[in-house]
Amino acid sequence: MPFKEDGYSTRTITLVLLNRRLAGVQQEQNKVLLALIRAREQYRNQRNARPLGMKALILVGGYGTRLRPLTLSCAKPLVEFGNKPMLLHQLEALVEAGATHIVLAVSYRAEQMEQEMRIMEQKLGVTITISLESEPLGTAGPLSLASEHLTKDNEPFFVLNSDVICDFPFKQMVQFHKHHGKEGTIVVTKVEEPSKYGVVVYDAENGRIHNFVEKPQEYVSNKINAGMYIFNPSILKRIPLKPTSIEKEVFPFMAKDNELYAMELQGFWMDVGQPKDFLTGMCMYLTSLRQKSPEKLYTGEGVVGNVLVDPSAKIGHNCRIGPNVTIGPNVVIEDGVCIKRCTVLKEAHLKSHSWLDSCIVGWKCSVGSWVRMENVSVLGEDVTVKDELYINGGRILPHKSIAVSVPEPQIIM
Image 1 (cartoon, one colour):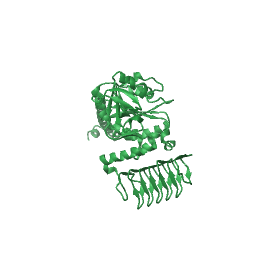
Image 2 (cartoon, rainbow, N blue to C red):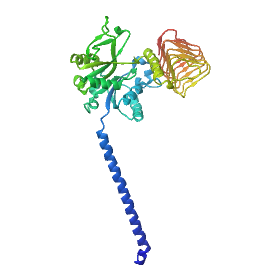
Image 3 (cartoon, helix red, strand yellow):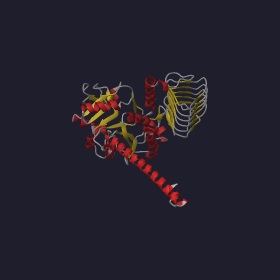
Image 4 (cartoon, one colour):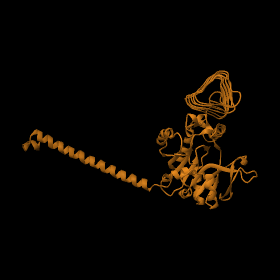
């Protein structure tokens, strides 16, 4: 060994070898570090070269009074529709269409929304921002309040009402909007009785909107505003930061300037912001699932028609479930229950031989044996209905115990 022959001590030899080894490790570390730096720069270049994803603003709004008693316990967009929060249907469709930043215009229960949105953010891989209104700003004011998020580039952005359930046509909206090249696009949907609504009058050939007519007594159109829009950022110049109606104070002027176009929605549509329409929308949604994803529907014993059941729910024997029923997580349905056109929310318990038609049963409710409920009865969270009672159109507030029948529609405080 040359070191020994040259008179070096064992300690010296050990130190020299250790230094050489450390020098080798340092070289390897430098190579790895250099490779990481190059990879990071390459990623940044690729990211900067990619087009920015689209933005969206969802008008979440305030107290959700139309959907009470459910909204006394839960913010309206978080109420489960088809076994997932109403808002999640919209978020998933926006992300699929390429949205990467979604702003929620909120004026009530902001803390509850914030907690849930952090979970959804992680799940969907999208940025969700809460834009909190200190006072309700109507349907246009929230755009002005969130303008810093909506004007980060000059690309169009979506706006939609949080109550809407449909086959969301976001990709088609982008194509239609870019084709006409003007400031705004409204999605319209056909209705059977236009005299109940404000209708949109537009050119059927190119979609250019002429005007709006509120509850027409004579037929002028059967198309109404479906609550989904796509706008260029220039619309924000039309909207002051104060309570403003986009339908009455913005759209008519855009139409007058020939800057507003209508795209007709294909497929089902429903504003599910009140119990009657919530149940109608559920029926439409389940029909759409049957057509597009029939494997998601339940096919167990006693099922009739379209039924959606969470895998954790327990259903007894000799039941009749359906048509048009949604059963949430950890629901227990005992033997002999008959249920149709209903939504049963998480951890509810329907006891043996109860009969329900056109009802919404809230979270953790208990419905007694041989109970009959119908006519859009709605139970708030943690309501107990004793055995052998009749509930006809009752709206029962959370945490109540009902010991007598409710033969006529009324609110039980």
